[in-house]
Length: 75
Length: 170
Image (cartoon, rainbow over all chains, first blue to last red; front, side):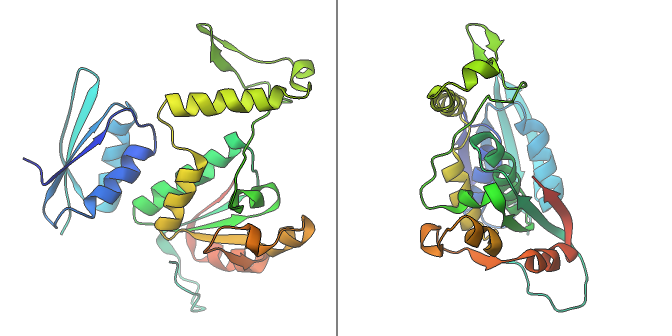
């Protein structure tokens, strides 16, 4: 179970990233944030976001057009 | 906030500047999308608003798009994509209609409004510099502009750009 869940379904670039950044502020270091999105571009974008910011993209998957991401906040 | 110059000329690898020169609804998107996203990714971001980009700092935005001279502008319509002949674009009221259509589309597709993106840029401490010369040229007053902007000229921008890894002109 993630420390926080962000529903970014229906939002387009760059809103899922911007909202995720905001939500990460409320996650403790080492804690996790789960993000749900429908923007297909968010798959590449969350990978790039995590590579650049040092947060860990623990897993991501897709089911029925909904993308799920699990990000662990860097310490 | 960006660091003030210490004269050392060292470049911060996580920094970006954007010169914003255009203020129509469509052209307002790239600079604000890139600045907010870069800030979210931990970059120090500076935006320099000049010429037609300057009105993007006005308190009240009423952004419009025009299909006049924009042959690539095609809107999804009736299952296809439709452009508008220049002759039609020139008719008074057509721009207003096209702008309304674009704004409806933006809302429907979950794309942020420029107002929202600008607010997020301010929240993320993106440095917003209004070009003093353009303020004088087009007779704008700082009281017309949103809070938290700075005034500066070419040298102000260049100083920031010398320390910035990514410098864009839009």
